Each structure stands twice: as C-alpha cells, then as structure tokens.
Length: 153
Image (cartoon, rainbow, N blue to C red; front, top):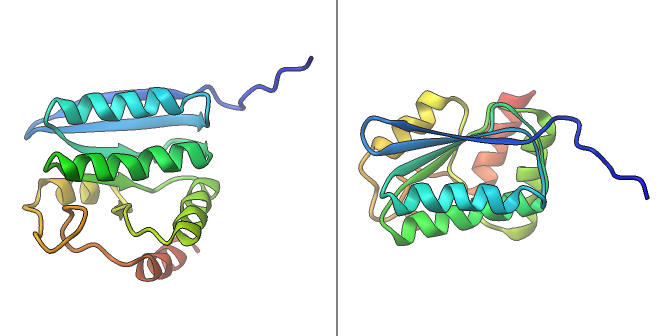
C-alpha cells in the first residue's frame, strides 16, 4: 500500500504576545491528520484566557476539517468572552478553501484580516456588543468575498 505524503510537513507554532494575545501559526499543509493538533492548540490558548490570532500566512493547504476547527474556535472564543481573528495573507488554495466553505455554509463567523498587524489590532480592540462573534466591525460573507476578490487578484 502506498502512503501519500504531504508536500510540506505541517507545523503548529504558538507565540504569546503582550496584552493577553496568542498567535497560532499554521505552517505547511494541514488536513484531517493535523486537525486535532490545531484544535488542541486553539483550545489551550483560549483556556489560558488569551485572545487569539491564527496566522495562515505560511499555510500551503487546508481541508474542511481545518476550516471547521477555525469556525469552531470563533464560537468557543465568543462563549468565553474572547476575540479571535485570522491573518489570511497566504496561498490561493487556502483562501479559496475558506471562501468555498463560507459560501456553502452561509457562515460569517471568520473575522479575516490581510496582515498580522490588522489581525492583532482586531483582537486588541474592545468588542462591539452588537457583533454575534464578539468581533467589532465584521463584514458579511458577501462583503468579505468582494474584499478578498479585490485583494487577491
């Protein structure tokens, strides 16, 4: 039996920043085989009471299990009164997977930013109480998709 190998070894890095913020960076390719590691890293950071930035800038591939982990993390953070954002300056395949999953699911749950600085600023800001996920100034899926198309071309 032939085993398929990922093109790039997956890695999950966690860094703590001042101000109760953690950055979880997903490097390489992530799929169902690494989803538990991603979920555990996110859950541990949130259990520590830190706001969270998930950095996908060095992510080469994700599948639906990782997208679900990210969506679940936003809901978990919100339930704990914490904020989460994604840095999405990454490979086109990762952007497209997120776009497809959001479109299919109809969810607006992923607060996405183009740079790490924007993502960090988003979790540092006081949340807008009218926002369902605890993130201020979120955009709808359609608005976000239009912004993504403009910035990805």
